[in-house]
Length: 279
Picture 1 (cartoon, rainbow, N blue to C red):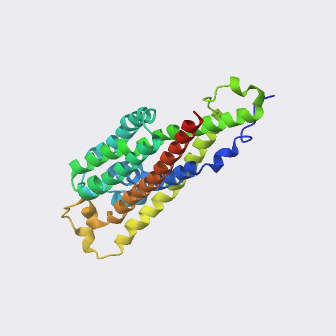
Picture 2: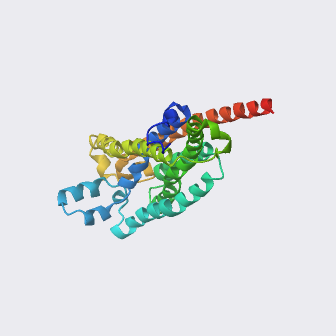
Picture 3: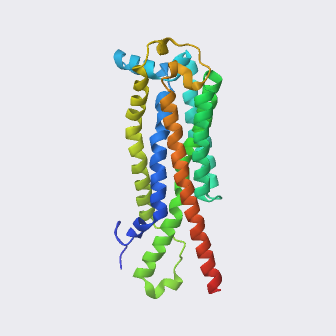
C-alpha cells in the first residue's frame, strides 16, 4: 500500500479542542504583534520612500519621530527589535520549547509581552532609553511566540500519525514506532497557524491607524504638546489607544493560553489516572 495522500486519513486533528484554542490565541497575538514593528521606526521611513506625501505621512505618524530622534538614533530601536527578536528570542524560546510545557511557555511569553507593552512602552518610553528598552524587550519576548509552535504541533502529529498507522496497518501495529511524526500533518498544522497569524498581520495596521486617527480629531493643542511624562503622552497622546490595543491583544492571548494550559493539565491527569488503573 502506497503512502497516504496529503489531507487524507489525518483529519482527526480538526477535532482537537486544544489546537483550536491555540489558533485563537495565535490570532490574538498576530493582531498585536505587528503594530510596534510598523510604528516604532521614524525618519528611517522618510529616507526609504520616494513619494514625499507618503513619507511625510509615515514620518508624522511614527512613534519615534515624536521623541525628536534623528534617523540614525531612531534606527537603533528598530535594530534592537529585529536583532533581539531574530536571534535571542527565537533561539531561546526554541530551546525552552523542548524542555517546558508549551502552554506554560506560551502563557509566560504572552503575559510578559503584555506587561512590557504597558510598562516599557506606555509608561517609560518618553525618552530614548525607554524606547530602546522596550524595543529590545519586545523583540526578545514577542517574536519568540512562533518558536513555541513546534512544541504544540509535535504531540498532535505523533498522536494522529500513530492513529493513522494503526488504522492502515493493524496487523503490524505492535512493530511500529508510536513516536513517529507525520511530516504532512506537521506542515498542515503550521499552515493553519501561519494563516491565522496572517489575519492579524493584514488587519492590525488599519486598526492601529484608525486608533491614532481618533486622536487627530481632538484639539490642536495636543499636537503642539511637548511635555512627555509617560510613553502614553508622546505626540500629545495620539499613540495611547494604540499602545492599549497592543497590550490588550497580548493580554487576551495570554488568557486564552491559560485556558489551554488548564485543559492540557486536566487531560494529562486523566491520562495518568487511566495508566495507573491499567497497571
